[in-house]
Amino acid sequence: MIRTRKLCKYFDGDRALDSVDLDIAPGEVYCLLGANGAGKTTLINILLDFLPASSGNAWINGLDVSVEPLETKKYVAYIPEQVMLYGTLSGVENLDYFVTLATGRRLGRERLLELLGEAGLAADAAERRVAKYSKGMRQKVGVAIAFAKDAKALLLDEPTSGLDPQAADEFSRLLKKASDRGVAILMATHDLFHAKQTGTRIGIARRGKIVANLDASDIGHADLEALYLDLMRA
Image 1 (tube, rainbow, N blue to C red):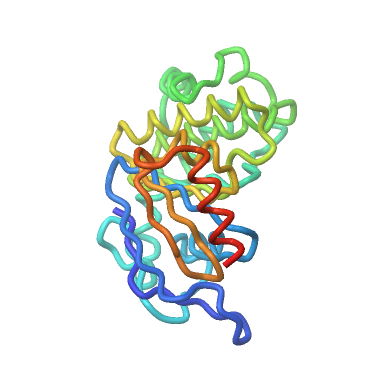
Image 2 (cartoon, rainbow, N blue to C red):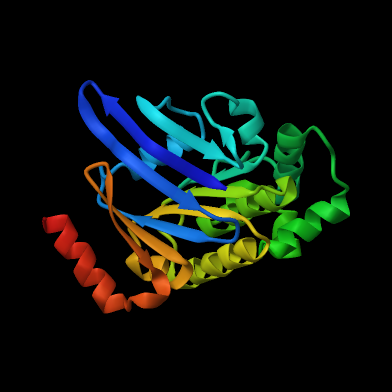
């Protein structure tokens, strides 16, 4: 569902991505760890067609992102570190607006509330102005948008940053629900604990390269932390 081959990106001669090969299947949660500057956000921005690659290819659902950017966006949902919503609108009003914008179709209010409920947002919160939402509540609206779009690929950039432990745990359960629907998920994160908790596979990026690919079930928290620190010092 999400695929790259020999993907490279340079900024004024500096290497941000260096020949990255990646395959994420439907239902898989791939957590990409790495320090700031490792290339995680650059990779996501290329998959979203926010940035052009310097060389190599990226595909979403078999479509080349650089050749068919509008078509690929039909299959993708994106949740950044800070989900940007309209503060003067309620959660259900934001969902209505963004789903209509993304798909060109209107959903009934009952269905919108149902989607927000599936994303973990309480019915009373759905009717409140987003300006009063916590970060975790905003993310739930973002997940509801992905559910409403029937997105096949979900890209996330530091989604658990700044969340309290309960909210981060709730978000991990939401990603599991999305993966159970067959969504391919790429999550860039610094959070080793939730990468282990949430991911089916874990990658470690360093200086634009993916230097380790791990099955999350094959490594414990302590061993993952030790490996990560060793690779960052290398």
